[in-house]
Image (cartoon, rainbow, N blue to C red; front, side, top):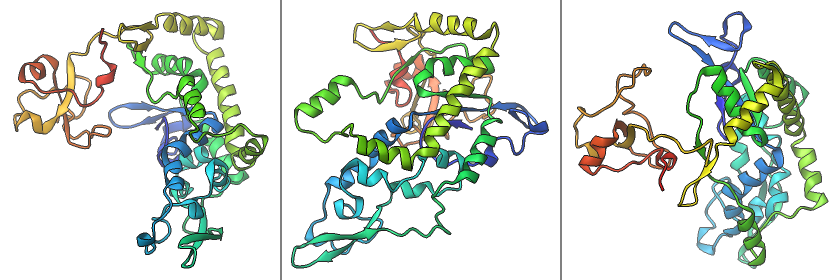
Length: 340
């Protein structure tokens, strides 16, 4: 299982069906290496809150919306005010995502109950929402943490986001990836945060109280991140040439980082253009003659069943030259192309 962010997995996905308890899953046709990338819990909580929750807290219900019911309802009465009031009801997110049976939907559900006050024409918070833990077992205990630690031992490559380049190189050396250039995306810059603060935007304050909330609610994630980070260091020590040589290879890789004339930073250097491009299948106008099936693929459809991120139309992999000649545009993976 590749774990790069939100999504509900299952510890049975990795290792339970492995032969001899190894770090690969054996099948009739291939071996599958697995990797886990763990994020610093505070940043994970902040990012999740900004992306999913903040807008729900800001959108208080209007009178005509009073018939909406929990959980499909917005407003501070149901979601709390700010980061802290949401976060304190959401236990260790990343371990829950990995274990797969810890009701990750609870992360995106209101943590409070409220009743409509007809005199004030608004919802008034009545207390914490009581989740049915039988149908939504969202809490984490030492047994769950033990399951996580057992699962961790069966994953081929692990790392933390702060050491992403080292993690990526370790994955490459494990499975034989040749091209590691990438462009960072969804990066919240220091200048954006400063601008938000200057204009009075909503920010997450760095208070000891909020730090305390996370230390309590995300305690297992915090412990887990430390274990993953140490395991990453230990694995580097066992890499070819030992950790010193591995870190030299990481430096050689990152030293190639370049910035295009358009200001785009390519970690690892400028990539060679791919001869292929993802396009909307509908733009091919029913023709399958141009579909590409790379030799390493086992799917003979040429990837036509793949779903593009955000572009939810069916997509197909075709020759870049033929797509350009037909005026068909790229819809997936386009940001990885090097442009002056």
